[in-house]
Picture (cartoon, rainbow, N blue to C red):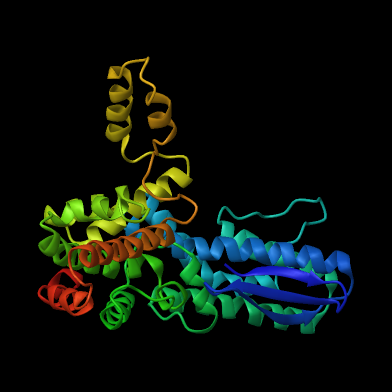
Amino acid sequence: MTRYAYDSGAGTLVATWGTGRGDVAETIAEVPGAEHGVELAAALASLARFQWRTYTHPATAAGDPDVVNGEAWRRAEERNRFAKVEAALRTPNLPDDDGCMLVFYSPIEESAHYVGRVLHAIGDAGLVDRVVNEVLTEQAAITAAELGDLAGRARQAVELTRPEISPVQVHAADSLLRANPLGTIDLFTELDPAAASVAAAHWLRAAATVAGEVANLEPVDVVAEADDIEALQVETPTVVLERLGAGETPTEVVVDLIADAIAVSEGKVRDLDGIIEAAQEIEERDTEDDDLAAWTDGYRICRLDPTRPAIDLLEDLLGAIRGCWLVFSEADSGAGFEDSVRTEADADTSRLQ
């Protein structure tokens, strides 16, 4: 999400955001005094964080938004607060003569009022206009990202995880993988990583099928075989292949894995049964087993990095596709791998719909 800083040398407020390949910066306005500049930067950063949370935590990923006071309803209500932001920036709630002040429950609305109070203290009408324009630009970027358009400032969404899949982004990722089944950097710098992971899961299954045929292996065993050739992340891609083989769609698998990681990042656990089973397995092991400590140290509550689940998943899936190429190359010359994978992937594109 966009971060803000005060450039003390130039006396300006600066906005920066990631692109998947490095950050870019833009000067927003001159701010009179370092104290005001730092406070305004902090206030805007807080507002941007709450605004982008509506992107990473959409109402549609939490159930029925029509159920009043439910999680989905609260998320939808928070997203609707975008419409209240400009007024809050221009005419913020201020303490009355008794020192009392109206405070909103909505993080977005209250953060906007806080920015407005900082602007009120500075007392520069021109600065207010420039900050309003900046915040509206940020909101427009979030709206564009929600629609699958990651141009301009919305590009920062490539560094975020959204547990809702954009068909537009899946189609774009599928096209990139068709051009290069082993993947390209554009999958990380141009696309939503969750949507790219959906396409990558589809192409991994095709690659594992092709490699398995030439190596006399089941598709689910190909990544583990590749790990004997070159170190790879085995567990997550293998689970993806198992679930796809059982009939789940790439979207279902990706969304579920990401949801697990997001829950863990918030201190919650979705797969309680899995943790109980792991604990039981630990209890059943010999306490003298030399491998027990290593096994427990390696146990993970979720399969993905909770701080960057979609990107972590995409990295694992693309690494596994390369692993399929390694297995294919060991059993064959390696020539024809990409064409064979394209043929296999195109045999059933309905799973990406």
